[in-house]
Image (cartoon, helix red, strand yellow):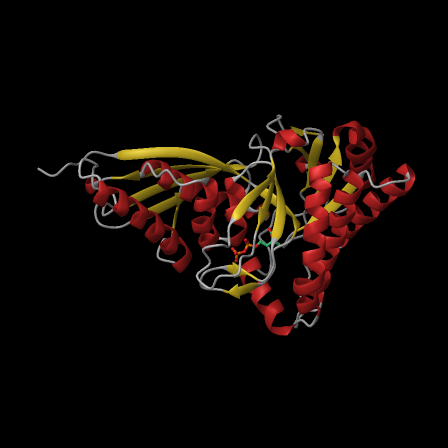
Length: 355
Ligand code: DP6
C-alpha cells in the first residue's frame, strides 16, 4: 500500500503597511512593480495569518485552501504560481537526495486563519501569501532565505513579499525581465527602532470598492501623474525613507510617509475614472494629525492610507498621549467612526492594545 502519511508544517506571517507605496505593475503576470517600496511590519499580536500546509497521498488529487474555514479557489494564476515554484524547489531536492520522501507530486491542503477581519482592508493578502509560501517551504524543508521566498510570495500578491521579514523592509523593483531580482530585503530589524508605534484607525470594515490589483492597472493605463510618481517621486522618497529609518529620524520618516500617501492618493484621483479610497473620516484623521504636529511644532505623527479609508498612524512611544490620546478624542464623535477598533501596535512584538 502506498504511503498515506500526512506531512505538515505551520507558520505565521505578519501584516505590513507600506510607507513608500507599491502601485503599478510593469508585468502583471509576474507581478513586477513599476517602482520600489518600503514597509513597516506590524506586531503579530493583533494582525497575522496562521497557516498550516499539509500534503498526503490520502488527500485525493486536488490541492485545497481553507481561509477562516471557507474554501478558496486555488486554480487562480497567483496561487498556482506559488505552488508551482515551491514544488519545483522541492523536486530539485528530491532529485538530489533519493532518501527524501517524494512530497512534490502530492496534493497540498492549506488551512489559514487571520486573527483580524479579513474584509477590513488591512493588507490581508500580504500576510496571507507570505504565510502560505513559508508554510509550504517549511513543509518541503527548503533552505531558501526570506529574500528567496519573497520572490515567490511576490507572485501571489506584490505586497506579500515584504511580509517575509519583520521590521523595516524594502521591495526592490529589480530590472530583470524574469523578476529574479524583484525581491524584498531588510532595511533594519524591528529592534533597531523599538520606540516606533502604529495606531490603526478602522474607519470601515467593509471590503474595498476597487481592488488594489485592478485599481493599479487602471492607474497605469490612464494617469499622467503616475509616470512622474514612478520615475521621479518614488525614487526620491525611497532614498529619503531608507536614510530616515537608518538614522531613526522620525521627522523625516513622518514627512515622507505622509507625502507618499498623498502622492499615491493623488494618482488614484488622477486615474480615469477616478478612484476614491479616502472618505470624510479619513480626511478628518489627516486634519487631526496635522493639528497634532502643528501643536507639537514638529512632525510627531504620520498618517498613511492604502487602498481603503482606514488610517495607519505612526508615532514614537514617548508621544503616545499626544498622538493616540488626542486622535481618540478628536475622532471619537464622528459618524462612521468605530472607536472600539482603534488598535495600538508596536512594530516590535509588543502586545497590541485597544486605546
Ligand atoms: C496600496 O499587493 O494588494 O497596499 O500585487 O495586485 O496583489 P497585488 O496588489 P497588493 O497592492 C498593495 C497596494 C498598497 C500599497 C503597498 O502595500 O505597497
